[in-house]
Length: 418
Image (cartoon, rainbow, N blue to C red; front, side, top):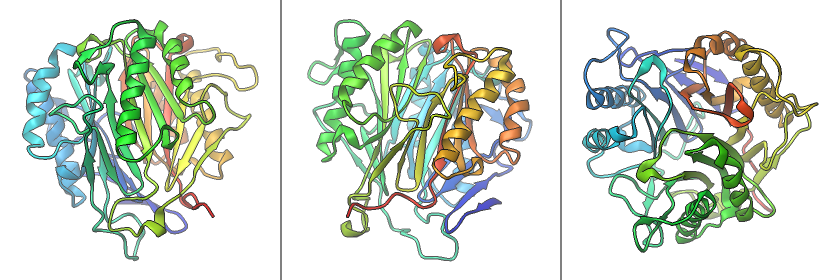
């Protein structure tokens, strides 16, 4: 086990030989406080290091077997998973993946996000990642709330699916399943373009939040997936109307296809100030959200970093020079370096360091650039500790070659209101 000590919590990075190490310098599971971040799993046989033979069903099964091996290696079970994210090469393969998915979650189903992307490492047909509850926490030699319970809830005011739960809370976070622009009354995609569809997605999220006594300002991160890169600005414009004063951390990417041929899909991570039982409400309620920005990184219609409880969420960074606001010149190595320098500037602006990063998400215009990315990436993460996801996309804003976001541990947590 590889651990990085902090004042009282620790970032705990672990690997097992029963799952593939995969491509790149990353850890299979990285825990901090009450969450474990599982690196996106490719359909690699851990014994051979090769992609398994067979169709997408065989590949999906291997991805889930790898996740299961990682989860069990750290003393957990599949029902401890809070969110599953499925990336497929062909949207038509979703039904086959769903058939496999149900065999691993027979009673409880996590929140879920599904999409088709331009490319996956090793030319895989599917890649799957997981976020897991971590009941024991990572405070060494101290009692933790090991009996915290997971709370899964649904409302009739938002679209339902037997394949996912609308909201799953654990400790101080609520994870919302990615919402498609479905009218919950008709069960169909709403008419109109990306603005109308983005509006429906966000109204579905709002309905879920209100059903659990939360509001939109409790959201700490929004991820927008659009079918057409030209629709990103339209979706962002709608997003800002739901957050007139405070804006969460934001990632926006273009994918090749979404379920039901939707133009947009939106995912949310929500603060959960009252925590989940058996915490006493007076011990947890009213923990504040802290949104911060620095002039040393590019600014946009979002908060650069939003902290809540023991996590900091960093908005996706393009390779923009913060002084000029322009894209840096050069190849993918220069652009990766700029993205990571921007993340470093944000992390340091809130009193943290890069070794506090627990999860990194990399979006590449050309998936074959993954090896060039690693040459730069290792200089920022020499221990390869963060969990990681890498996908290929058709296009990125401003025609960038790469975009990177991150989740950072927040050792001191955020305070309660007076």
